[in-house]
Amino acid sequence: MTKRREFLRTTALAGAALWAAPWLACTPKKELSTMPAAKGAAGTFTLPDLGYAYSALEPAIDALTMEIHHGKHHAAYVKNLNAALVDFPAYQLLTLEDLCTVVLPGDLAVRNNGGGHYNHSIFWKLIQPGGSKVPGPKVAAAIVSSFGSFDAFTTAFTEAAKTRFGSGWAWLCADEKKKLFITSTANQDNPLMKNVVEKVGQPILGLDVWEHAYYLNYQNRRPDYIKAFMGAINWDKVEELYTKA
Ligand code: MN
Image (tube, rainbow, N blue to C red):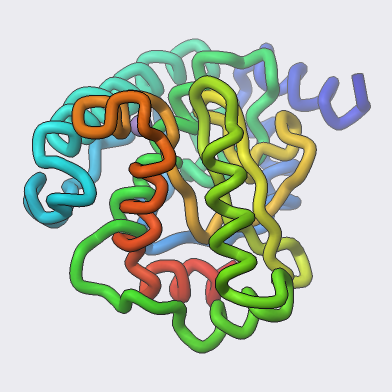
């Protein structure tokens, strides 16, 4: 165990909020407009409104899937995160993004439900109807620079989503130099989780490949769901996240 991890563990166990200040100061503050505001106590995360009708993405994603996914699955991550934070005072001061960044692998209730809340919060925005159907100028240039072409990116992202075994997410991320890379994570982990994942980055596009995200309409046809998602991406939101990364 690294010294940093020992310190984080000590902080978590002690439950003394003030002890958190030194390492909070070291955490980059990159607030996303899509994220809930800073938190001061457990039990204050809330389910964000979807912002559009459950049926708005049909036929790519059906209304019943959206209703259950947002109203039941995402709502449960929020509820369970709030409940978990009661036992983890050191995480209570953090924004959702910072919580993901510092969460320890063994703090499973915070890791799973904090990740679940973060991942779904950006996912709804990334498929919000009405945005551009092609990448904006900054992301388009970064995609060509990082993958060679948009087609090469699409192939690689689709492959990452198809081959994520079991439940998880495929991601397009920006590294610290704003170069793009594709990765996937298990369960509700995400690339912010520097103590959990091998490859750390700022997510700018994420695809939920849990069966709950597509099974009602697509059953075992995950590739068809991935293709439908690729056509439903709101590239204005991707551009926005990339600009802030
Ligand atoms: Mn989901």
